Amino acid sequence: MSRRPSPRPLDPAYVTTLLTSAGRNPAALTTVTELADGTYNSVYLLNHADGDLVLKIAPTGPGLTHEQDLIQTEAIFYRAAQGKAPVPEVVHSGTDFLLMTALPGVTLNSVSADRAQYRRELGGIVSSLHEVTGTAGFGYPQRGLKDSWSKAFLGMFDDLLADAARYDVALPPKVSRQLVTDRIALLDSVRVPRLIHFDLWDGNILVEDGRVTGLIDGERAFWGDPVAEFVSLTLFSDVDTDLITGYGADINRERLSLYRVYLYLIMLIEGTPRGYTGPDHEGLVKLVERHLAKELAAL
Image (cartoon, rainbow, N blue to C red; front, side, top):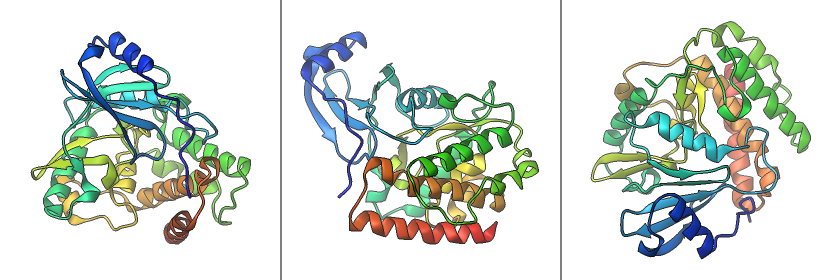
């Protein structure tokens, strides 16, 4: 079986303190329910008379190099995306917690109707999200921003290779930093840092009544290449016409393959510090390995 990194214990006094600090009346809290869908943070739905809230608490324990201060990165993402995409409003945040408004809807991976419509609308929302540009540089906010996308992405890739060595995770022989250094000029064609969610698989997209109502779990966000967004948007699948139609532009497939390699490596390596085991995890590893081999062959 798999496990999440160790959560911080949740107790009534802690919740009362958070609500008070956020200017919300603790006495108006009716119920607290843990949401079990996440695999990283501990997440709770707080039913409150003045509007439901979601509380995320950062895990403790080992992780990947870039998995530091992710709660703060998520708060940065939501604040930057306000007005451009349907995201929660940050109510209160700290070094290890995030309190935000709850959005309506169910996850897109739980519905089968209106898929084409959702994909077209989602493409338009992502296009609007990518209008948000950064002024300080490229990369993960928590890792320090760089003055070019090539420097930022090479650093991200190097961190991942170091994580594989640290956790003794065997990688395919073709995986090396040369995959990135051979494409410096291609990466440097990206001149404007744009806001990238980077975890927009169907489980992080909320829908209701035929509309997309929310993009959630923005802790993996960075400032970078919009093409990178399409890795999770098309996880284990081809880039679909509906999504591209909604987005309003095609994307560079060589850069997409490179970013897919990056995400697949994350998925292979993260299981070790998180302690993932069992048939389900083994099946996922085989799936990732197949798709990783396909993208490596394309580069």
